[in-house]
Image (cartoon, rainbow, N blue to C red; front, side):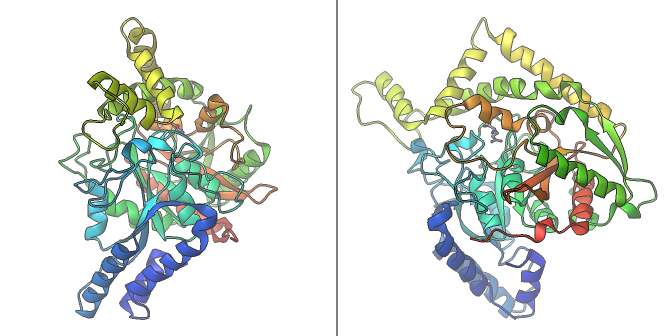
Length: 485
Ligand code: GLN
C-alpha cells in the first residue's frame, strides 16, 4: 500500500478516487481480519461516505489536504460520536459516545477516512493486547505471537496494510512498544501537545495520543494534523505547532554536529542480545550519517517501572471510579440494592488486569500508605525527569531499544504480570518525564521478527526526534519489508 503522499498524488491527479482507495482498504481488512483481529468494529459504510465527500470536493475543483481520503484506524479508547467506543471492556460494551474526541474531529475535518476502531488491552492496561475482553490480536509477522500493546490493534492494522495510518494512546509505552513488535513507526508526543478530550482516561498525568505509520513521514503528517491547543483539555499546551514535515531532512546537513546520546542503563541484563546488536548497528549508522555519539548515564532510569506501577494504577483507580453502572454502559442484572448494584457491576464488567490495578491504586492512595507509596513515587518521578534534563544539556536526542525483546508467543506471559510490566522498562521513563519518544524499525531477529529503535527528545523537540528518525530511515531498508500474510 502506498504512502500518504503517494495516495494524495493519485487523488489530485485523478488516477484513483477516494472511494476506490477506501474500498481497497476495506477489502484488505475483510481478507486478513479472520487471521489478525486488529479491529473491534469496522465502519465500512461511514468510510465510503467519507471517501465520497472527498471525491465530491476533488470533482468540484476544491483543494484537498494531505490526509483527505487516507484510510485510518482509530484505537477504540477514543470517543467517536455514534460509533461504539468500548475500550475493549465489557463495562463499555454497549457505550456509544454522544460526542467526538478532538483528535478524530480534526481528522474528520481533514477528510481522513476512518475504516474502524482498533483492538487494545482493556482500558489500555497491558503490553500484548491479550487483556482485551473481545479476543486477541495476532502479530502480522507471526500469527502465534502478540502484536504488543496496549495499542496492538492499531500497530497490527498498519503493519498488515489494513489502513495507511492509525492513532494510538501511550501511557507507559503503548504506542512505541507495539510499533516495535509490529515493525512500524509509532510516536508518543510531548505531554500536552495533543488534546486528550474524548480519550477515555487511564492515567491522566501520563496519557498521550499519537500516530502510527509505515514511514516517519506518514507519522509526521498525522502528528501535524492532531497536535495543537484545545480549550477542551486543560492540560493542552498553548504552543505554536511547527510544520513537522519541514524537519524531515538529513542530520548531516546542519551547521553543527547532531548530538546523539546512548542511554547506558538500557543495555545489560534482560536485553535480548539480537536487539542489542541491532540497536548498536543503528548507532554506527548514525555515526556514518555524521552524528556525534556520546554515552549518557540516566541512573534513575531503572526506577521507572516501580514508580509507574504506583502512579498509573493510583490515577486509574480514581479515573475508573466513574464506571458504576449508573452513568455509562454495562449494569448488572443480579442485584437488589444500590450497593450490590455498584459492586456487582464492577465485578462483572472489569477484567482481571483492570481489577488488579484498581486494587493496587486504591491501596497506594489510602490513608497511611499515601506518603510511603504515592508521594515517594512522585519524588522519584522528579529524579527521573532531572536525569533527562541533564542529558539534554549534552545531546539533541537519546537512543535506546524500544523493547528488550521481540514479539513473544500469546499466552507466554499471561500468568506472570510482573514479567509483562518489565517489558516497558525503556518506554515508561519517557512518559514519567512527559517527553516525546518514537520507535522505528531497526532490524529483524533470527526468526524474522522486527526490532524497534527508540529515539527520545527533550520537551517539544519532536522536530529533532523526527529528523533523526527520518535520516536513519532513509539510510536503511528495514521499513521496506512487510509481513507476508
Ligand atoms: N504496558 C503498560 C501498562 O500496562 C503501558 C500501557 C499504556 O501505555 N497504555 O500500563
